[in-house]
Length: 366
Image (cartoon, rainbow, N blue to C red; front, side, top):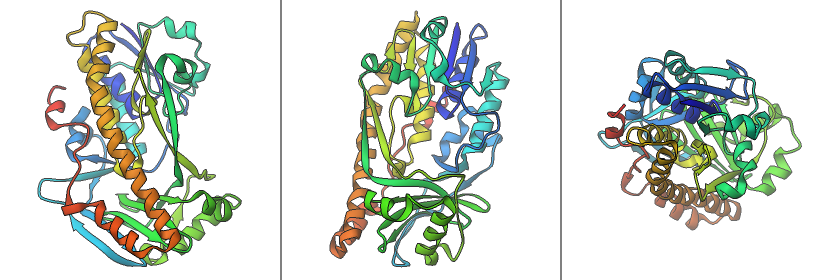
């Protein structure tokens, strides 16, 4: 089979590696907009059992978080260690892309960098037996066939920026600020770096951050969270865009020879940390669908049938987490102490851990 994977993020690279390994007759090509080795983000989270996927634990450096915490006015309101048997892994997105690219190269996948999927014509797409559409939440290919996929976008009320800090957060940590009202999510993923995702209302973003440089914004945020960061800095990878989180939904995951995976098919709010796990889950489901299918159509139908319930389930969970964050910012803005305490208490009741979209047994098949 001649297979094109449009997009070289975690979902696309994982799908490419698995499909190439499934049969020596599969000729798989990945096209990616970014250049080879181009920086693509900060840290990500995974359930630790997912590291056995494509032997990632042997190909990259990871860290284990120790639990969860929430700080308000510089004081810890919540300090939890993970229950026995629960381990959350963090890793560099660049490192993950490198490890997955290596898996693809070992499997004989052709990697083509510097090609925007928007430049690929429909005639070129139809020249392939299968096109795996993995070009992200803003997928040009999905947009081109919007009616066929039945896709929609809902934008959250909060605005956010994905940053980093040199402060080591050994737990998945939520930081709250009052003046201005800010909610930040932090976790260490490298020896000297932690991801820092900062949320604020659109009014705060417009009045305090939109007209300032990235450096000035990072300095201001470091000051707002100076106690929690221990005076450490906040870091950006270039110009900042304070945007609302886009929740992508698609009524159908397949059209003709095309199939959607990863963020092109669905997005889940970053506060739940399901994104990379879901990318792997889609790749596994797509590869599994080919095992017993007699045709491309049967395989794509099987993939959609298997993933649809999971997408609905985890989309509901992630939407609830996004609304919690929006409600928390509302309460911080209004100074509603009782509501803040109520929302904090509801975040991790009884130290419960939400299961991810991949079960350990699924990984044993590959």
